[in-house]
Length: 202
Image (tube, rainbow, N blue to C red):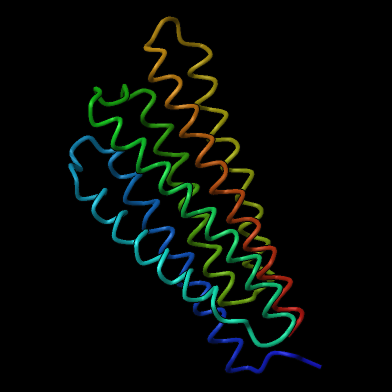
């Protein structure tokens, strides 16, 4: 028998999905600065605002014990993933600030970086949708898309490894950013898996 009522479940998944979307907004704002030289400070402002709200809501939610074992399991796990996404957004923000002092990435390398970032942000957004729908098809679709993310990442690395010369700082930044987005994708996959577990438990 379920240990989480229907109304309680809807409230919980709604709150968790909202936190994931806030993290995605923060990630998107920082990404805009990194990938679009014309963005200016708008992306940074949006990211900082979303991060501040995210941290406040995470602290408030941590003070409340979810009702029911299934709610505790998914609440704690998704909460941990959201906190990790917030840290990744902060790392991207720091990189965005640092990149303000440098020339933009070369277009040939910026294009695959944009592809990686878009794929990661799409996965995070889909993980919020999977939480709300609880659909096994949504979870399976997201996990399938993780492979596409890996292909995009491989394209960037092939370009970096095949390039002669180049600015070593830019190369380092690109690899570090790629790693950040990979972790975002991994977190999205974990959220989707927990969403699937929760939907079976209630």
